[in-house]
Amino acid sequence: MKLVEQIAVSPDEGEVRLDRWLRRRAPHLTQGQIEKLVRTGQVRVDGARAKANDRLQAGQIIRVPPIPEERRMPRGVSERDVEFVRSLVLHRDDDVIVLNKPAGLATQGGAKTPRHIDALLDGLKFEREEKPKLVHRLDRDTSGCLVLARHPRAAAHLAAAFRAREAEKIYWAIVLGSPRPLSGQIRGWMCKKAGPGEEDREMMRRCVQTDEGAVHAITDYVTLSDAGGKAAWVALKPLTGRTHQLRFHMAEIGCAIAGDRKYTCDRATPGGLADQLHLHARAIRMPHPSGGTLRVEAPLPAHMAAGFETLGFDAREAKDAFEVFA
Image 1: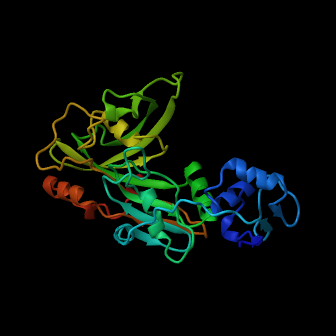
Image 2: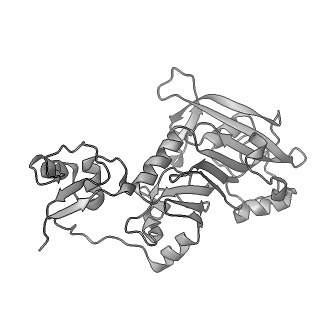
Image 3: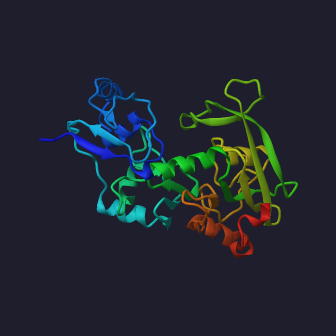
């Protein structure tokens, strides 16, 4: 029989609402059930009644009554999945994990997407009891640096860095044609509209500021190498984080990313390139939750490495992914 527990709020949990703190320990409870436990005084903070939206501080003692366990069995992660997701790890410390997400694997799931990074996170617990948390996303067909927080304090810190645009992300792409000018900034208004096909339910379109759902997007770009005007290796630095921003912006200037079936242009794709999106989150640099700077680079996926070789691009020429935007 379960007994009443007295649990201390750990420093890693940061400043979190009481209801969210409870949900982490009993994710099967509904919000209504949690609020009832708090309202009736079964859950207390430092011996006193509290409200569900009260903010907790490290060291406070939470009285937690016996909570029935979830009846259904958790899905779990197979040994094969654990081995796979751990093979993606580029960086791991006490606060942060950075993965090299492969192209074709979604970050989060949907009705028709049972396999995705979010479903594999149990395999990245390592020595901790809780699984890490996604703090941003990459498109399914985009590869590269994907950041995870290993505990709530780190999640809050990293999420704040993304919101404040303190996280610098550099993408590499092979684009059709060669941008003119060779470097610059793309900016404009975009909004979500239904696309022409069943798979285009989420597609960005050009719009004006007054249109419903309009968001402003800004991307810096630099052409690193050119393959006779047929294709180019481009570094991209998004200054905003909009859906499909980089893909949309390159198509807007007439140099769509090779392999992009949704955002296209009227240029031919050079022979020898794989029929996959040639967009890679090459590097990320941001404040680390425990101080200092987190900086990680992801090697090119196989299809882009092959594309570089076909077109005569040499990744070694870009010794510092951030230098070209300095």
